[in-house]
Image (tube, rainbow, N blue to C red):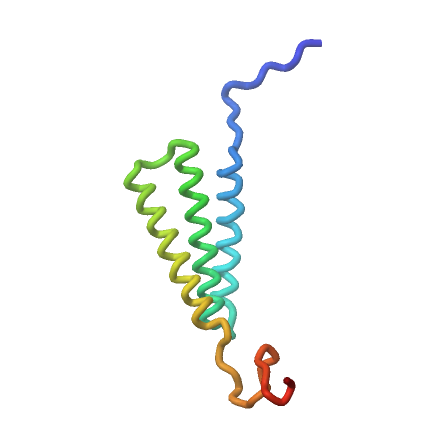
Length: 116
């Protein structure tokens, strides 16, 4: 029995394209959750921006691998991904310890002299 000859019109998705699709879905979920959340803060916004930046990184990888887009368009996508990720990381780092209720010991991560 002879092996089946591959169909020349059938295309397969490369790993970067599959990862791009996954990241796009995760970005949509992150943006949706941010939009419907009543108790969002700056860390949540920063996280969504980092996810969007990573998604743009996978779009760039796919564009280079599959020869999509011009070099100018790729540069715009790369710049947007770096800027979004940078802003997101800045928000996460800046607001990670968020506001507390103002009472000493209200944050479990803080240590006071009483427990030392």
